[in-house]
Length: 309
Image (tube, rainbow, N blue to C red; front, top):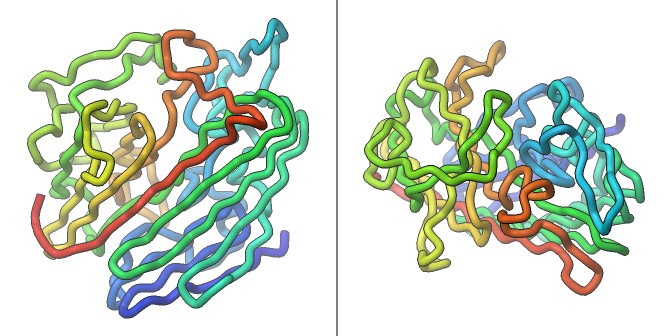
């Protein structure tokens, strides 16, 4: 696969993008790396961790690798046991997008996903517009299908904010007091669970903890939140803070306990805003079905500052 690469710049901040998987290869401020990434773009072709990618058509997990729509079953590509993870064997993160730089601080990625791609119905025109306006990095994601089909993508950066010792002492704050209940395969059951005063309660800022305390849950954002207020805040001891604004109903938070060479366990925290996972099989969940008249839209704004959480 021929992988194209562009570099965006604004003031002391830069971002490297790859056509493969619409991947954000790197994000730096004053040459301090803010996310995990491979130096060699070809390494992403065998990357099992979805580093920096746009994942989908439907991010996260679909139980049984199947769903029904308008009375018809749609068997999907199973790539995590009997389930579908991040769109299947050749989801959006495994395909080569067209990549064009439209300005020194902006690029656009496009992909046409054909009807039947990994089992999903309908042709979909995907676009990701990435804009770097110091100190913010913004992703605007759109998808226009030619027929009703599920769409719920996620941007999959692993954030380090310059920390080289893992994220055990990284402080996290979430505008969420509920998570989706999951079974032993990580598939949502349809129930929501209060985090209470458990280790998953980040309504008050606290350290993520070591890699043995694996976090891999979908946190439902408080519905009454101000859309201009960050739903996720992350801070490390070097004084850098990440604020995340998202228009999605929640995000998978993953503490990267299963990373391995060349990265360390718990080497970065992954924040994946999206629609509810397995929503295609749970009628009580907010729908992720999009149509030509109701296309998909997502806006994700990441801002770096100095301070604590």
